[in-house]
Length: 417
Image (cartoon, rainbow, N blue to C red; front, top):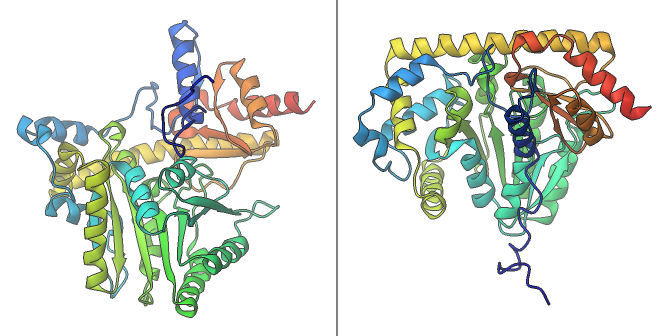
């Protein structure tokens, strides 16, 4: 017998399949190392400027560098300072906290940490989290790491229209077999499609979940991954749907993943928060306690420097206004790129899922790996998912967008020939 792993049974073999996104990123780096020119890199969800360099908000860079070494290098508190917690709450709601609710927050390493806390603390081991069929794949990884299973709900019907029919059906079915229901919605600017749920969508779903909670007496949690909310048109108005979660039954709660990676372009600093609201102070005290406890056992605490930088910017009206304007400029650039691509996709007959904003566009296809392989021959690097091709429009300078849709359509035609 040849021993392949010393890990426990549940861990043996983990990671044997490379991450689909970072595998492509590695290929891009290798191509650049080999001197390949005119690479189109639509792999990773990080905003790039028109030179192809990582985009930054100048005010963030300036204010972070002003922080004293002691602040940068000292421990943060486990939950985050009271000032950071309030900044995260204020930034999340921007005036649209539902009436009659109490909010709380706990600092996390990015939005990913917030999603992990949702999955870890709102389901028992072996229970199922409900996630979209078009998805950010780490949802599944997180569920496995937390000893949970996943079930997917259908987002679009055959006509590529958003549908709540399967969401409702799957929610009922999952809650029929377990004591807790956690449904994750990635909106506005869904990763990877760019779809943003409308107030009409929520007007359909919120009463359904209220009734489901009240009728079953079981615990219902709505998880909102709002990483891309600032890049869908009007950042303030795109939060308005949050105010619709009023009159929640006592056994229903809403939790939000807030990501500084996207809102402040500080991906590597790994900072964010899990933000929640509920009518009961006792429930929200428990919210703070359970997520702080889990944080201590998983990553101890967050990035002190990133938290203090956000507190400084959000607490100074002039700095906050600068950040808003600089962020809006990048969001405008993103929109222009997406508009060019969408127009040319329509002209080329290239199918794409409904895009309203965010960092990604998705092109449905039955053989995405073959399409991506064909595109790599032209040094176009996109990510193959299970049922389509993901294009990180955030990372592609405007000068490289014209003609891209036609190239992708040509690759699809070659694969289908």
